[in-house]
Image (cartoon, rainbow, N blue to C red):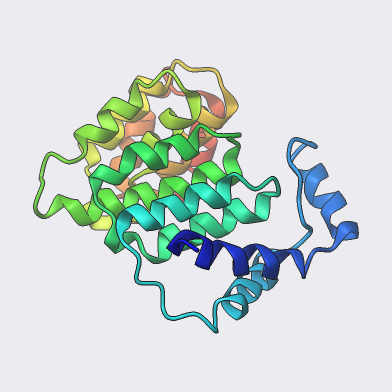
Length: 231
C-alpha cells in the first residue's frame, strides 16, 4: 500500500461512516444541486478525520505526497472529501512552495464553486506570503493568474492577500481591483469588494479614497462590499 493509500483509506472510511443522507439534501440544495454531499458539517467532518487518523503516525509526507493526497481526495465524488483536502493543504502549507501552485490551481479549476475555490485561495495566499521573504517578486505568479482565462483562477488572484494585513501589497491590490472591475460576473465583483474590505481593516483611509476615486469604474456590488465597515 502506498503512502497515499495509507492516509486516503481511513479518511474515506471515517467520513463515510458519518454520512447523513437526510442532512445531505439541504447541503446539496445550498450549492444549487451541483454537487453530491455525505451530509457532514465542518465540525463533525474535521473530528471524524482526526479520529480516523489517530492510529496512524503524524503525517510526515513530502510536498509531492501531500499534493497527491489532495488530488486523490478530489477524485471522490462527495464535496466533503474536497473540504478535507483543503484542510490538509492549509494545515501543512509550510511544506509547500511556489512549485506547488500549478497543481493547486488544477484543483481550483476542477468542479469549481466558491466553497472550494475560496479555501484554496487561502492556501495559495499562505504559500505566496511565506515565500515573499526570500522571493520578493513571488507575486508575479498571481499577476499571471489575474489574466488567466478561467474565472475562478482570477478570483484566487484577487483574494490571495486576504488576511495579510500590514504585509498587503496595496499597489498590487488596487491594480488587481481595477483590472477586474470591468468584469460583470458576480463572483469577481464580490471578490474585489471582499479584498478591499479586508484591506480596510488596516488601511481604511486608503480604501475609502480608492473607492471615491474610482466609484464610476467599480460596480455597486463591489463598492457596497468594500465599504461595509467604513461607515
